Image 1 (tube, helix red, strand yellow):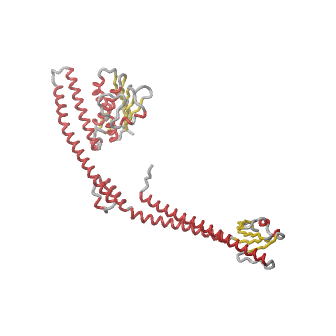
Image 2: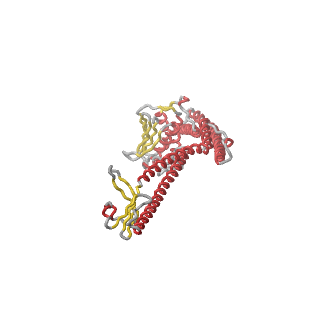
Image 3: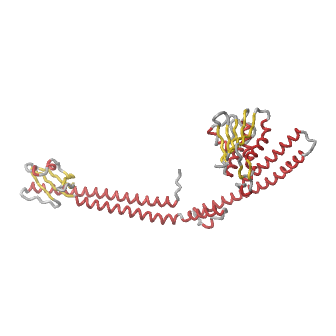
Length: 428
């Protein structure tokens, strides 16, 4: 999952982490180099001092031992017992020693030992003062790391503001355009750099998109106007023909089917126009639709699909439900759902059930797989075993209409028998 933090915040954190990491690395390197060099210098000086003391004692045993650095002792094999027990078996070299003083505090010192011709020399160098100096150095380095980190943070804040100023300005103008609902040219407000190229690309994209939307609106308006006229003619003509007294019952039924088909086409055109404009029309125009009444009309219009199939279609109304939407929108949605239920049910029953805040279409067809329930609402996807010349657009249109009005449409397999259940929930 990608981070949603602002670009400036990420740049600021990068500067701060870079400054902290570089300062910490420098501090660790300084401590390591200091400790390494100090240890080598002290060891070399102590060894040279004890070697010199032993050589002088061998050349002139009566001369007192004098160390140029620290406290020293020269012993022979016979007098070695006078030295501390921990020293007596040490070999030639420089050793790190630890011992407790009278107060119980551990003292750290270095002991240089030299064994030659029965003479043993000891030089002790107390490095407690160096430990104090090391602690002071560590404190200074920690303070330096904190200081440099804060300095990096301050520099990062200043640089991020300067570097991201064009990007921030571009984002601000885009937010203003989104609030205002109209776009203005962006490129004139920016320099001829990468941000300026981005602004120009956005301007070109906006121009193409605006032109495409205008073409679609004009096309939809033209199609709406051109199609409504012949449909109105068909509707009025069938109405006049139905008033003729010499019509047979069979011919009168066919005229009713023509009238219903004309009305469905008109409703579909209106619904598609609403979708193309992303325009929700309903409560503001006072259009209150009775769901059960629309469902009954849709069932009646779908009866020719049944033909000779042994199917019974029934409407069960458990509650009176109305919605703030045009009847045409609800009719298009129910026509697709009820039509699919009748189409896929070879025998049995299709039940349209109206309850509080919802409508369910329950069939006894082959059913659907749970994993395919959501996929059926995608454009071009058809159910298994679908016949005819459908393009798989019906359920996609239903989903878009429901989204436009805030309804929840879904499909699921039945658990008590074969078949599927399609539902529209009007109150989420």
